[in-house]
Length: 111
Length: 115
Image 1: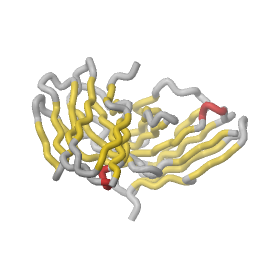
Image 2: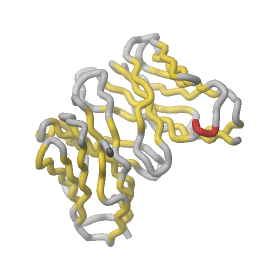
Image 3: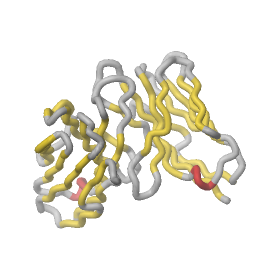
């Protein structure tokens, strides 16, 4: 059982569609990060959210941290083929050095 | 300029061999990490060093031994390789190892295949 569960595990959509990826846990995190990983490369940080209820936008990507700081969502508007990749959420627990990664969501945006 | 670099990119070896993966970061960060990513893409922390001191040591077989000769380098040595060690190993670094804004910068990964 993983501490951070992401859903869906895999998503294949047409260019121009909207989508939402969820990251859920029963544990509280002091912050939550979203990374994107492309094939053959390491994950790259997209955003960090630290306050319960916080919403951050990065162009067509909208990130939200749950009020109780146990969950997060990533919403992509008008997806493009360049959005294709593995999306990973990662949580920092209070008083911990460790970054706990979620199970990952593989996104494929078809032209 | 590559921020976090790893060598080699690919490593194919026989069971029972000993191998090393090297990692270097030129970001001036204090903390470095080794992660293992399995075939299902799950990324799990193995070790972390802060200023050459081991601060995280997860439940990893003692065949795996990290070594940090200085703040900019964290190498991973693996003894008696087993089939289950096949995975992609990522090195990462961050300015601090503590706190909420722990942005980690990852290397390109080393794909280890044990035959």
